[in-house]
Amino acid sequence: MARVNFGVEPGQVYRLNNNPERQWSVETIVLGPANIPHAVLRDVAEPSERRTISCSVLADRSQYRIIH
Image 1 (cartoon, rainbow, N blue to C red):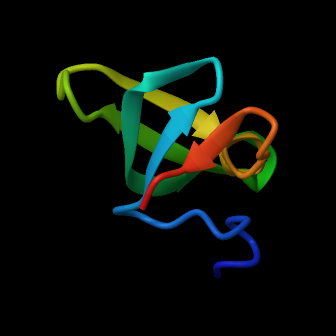
Image 2 (image 1 turned 30 degrees about the vertical axis):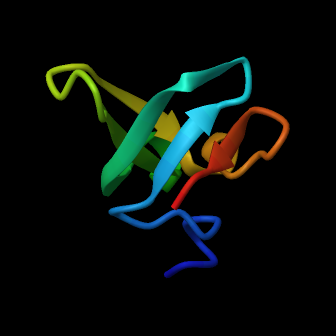
C-alpha cells in the first residue's frame, strides 16, 4: 500500500516549502476521484483546519517536506 500512497502514511507530519512554520499531520488516506489516493491533513497548530491533497503532490519534495 505504501507504493500506491507514494510513501505517505497516517501520522506523518509535513510542511509546505513556502510556509515552513505551518505543519500538517496526515490523519488518513482516502481514495479520491478515479481511485487516486489523497491524504486528509490536519494543521498541527489549528486542529480544526483540514485539507485534502493528492498523495503524489504531498510526496513531491519541491512542494512539501516531511518533518517526521
